[in-house]
Image 1 (spheres, helix red, strand yellow):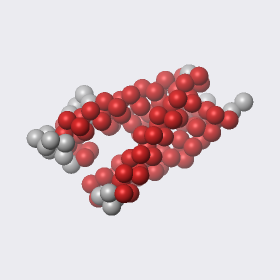
Image 2 (cartoon, rainbow, N blue to C red):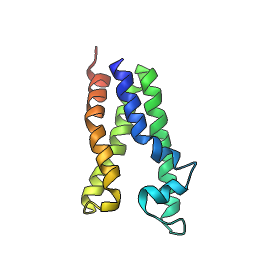
Image 3 (cartoon, rainbow, N blue to C red):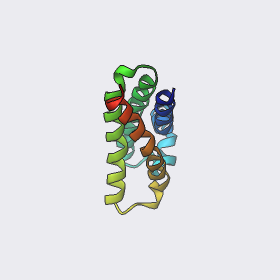
Length: 119
């Protein structure tokens, strides 16, 4: 049951960014990028990739066989963003996203540990 809860939490971390694919106005609200910006299509595509991570986390909540893949995909998503955020000087406009990812890291660590080392 704890595994399912952990993967559900990780899915929730990716829910709003994933929904932004279907509601592009969220892209502007989440990242502070206007729809007219040349960066907007890239961030809209990024939302689609968040949707993939969201689906993988939901899948992992119900299928233990996919949890190792889900751990890797989710770790790449969260850790790469945090690394880029840090290297970019920790922009204030992305602080909330970074905090959510930071809060999710212990959950990911637990889920990943269980995925790779659970008997």
